[in-house]
Image (cartoon, rainbow, N blue to C red; front, top):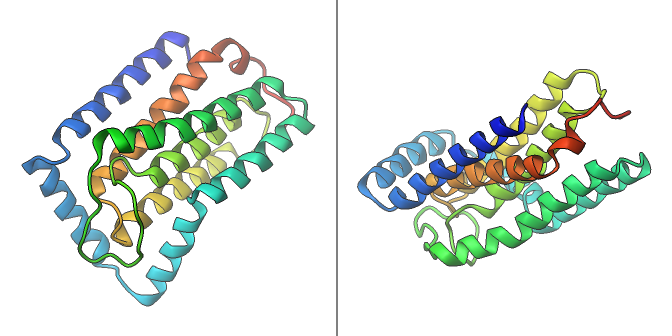
Length: 208
């Protein structure tokens, strides 16, 4: 992907986030939240709740830090300096932007049907944004690697983003628009980091 395409994609996702941020508490935003809530809660059960609790744990800050350190260690062992730098920049951006954005919008969390107790603001979803940045960064590294079965690995990363994000709505701690905004913002961060390191990442496939 050319640098201009990455810049265009970044602007598109930034614009989408801006639209969501502007309308998330409007009548349209409430309609989206209600419709998605009803769809997700239609599958409520003991097993589903247990699964969602598991996925939401994967998206916790501590889990993301551990996974990031493991990934960074692996990249360093393979002496992939720029891939390591890419991962570090992405995750640092996640740790800085998520609290800044939450405190900027200061949207209160949903008060109904909450299955777990949690504090802090709601918009955007930190789990959705953080997992999108982590697994989205992995997808970028996979794209530029010599690994086989890339489609399966892409699908696995996308699956974790979807399930971690959905778990936040299912557990009642986020509105659907929070999660959508988190995914969009996370994607924008990955694209921006890839844009910054464009010449170094888009070279010949790495040995992993």
